[in-house]
Figure 1 (cartoon, rainbow, N blue to C red):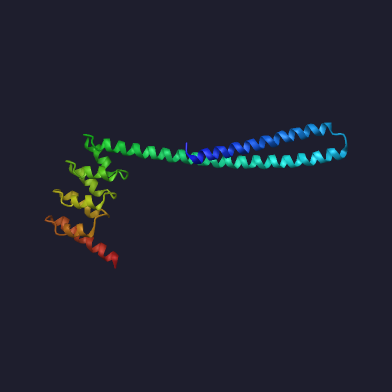
Figure 2 (cartoon, rainbow, N blue to C red):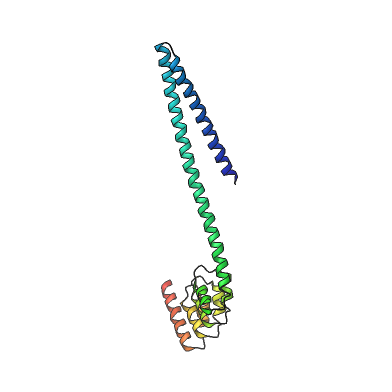
Length: 199
């Protein structure tokens, strides 16, 4: 429990205590009203009762607002904690799945937009061509990994790098000199496209 939570609880207790004190005074005044003898005494007590009622309503209103605010704050804290737990668990699950022997499961991790960079880095060295291809295609794959994949022996991996928006001009320049004619041509086209967009 944090300091703010303790402080809020103390504030809530104070308001409840004050409201109970006002309620006690109100009960006493009502008892006095029954035993008062003159009209003047009754009128004075009735005025005090009205004041106490207003005070009690005000404190109840304040308490209600504070309780609503605290409930919202607690709900937000719970939501944030749940999100943090889900994110942590999600990363753990993805890390475990990235080591699975089934290539289709590793493919799913490689193309997942929530897969952390460190897992993408490991999968970029996967023995399976299609897993590396998905890493090259993933828009969250950083330039450092794409630079390494641009040297991949299979042209299909290099092709996906050209399509990736994270591929730098430097990497595209290198691929425009690729020994594979197909890769070379699409890299040149992508370079032309990006240069024209800058104009």
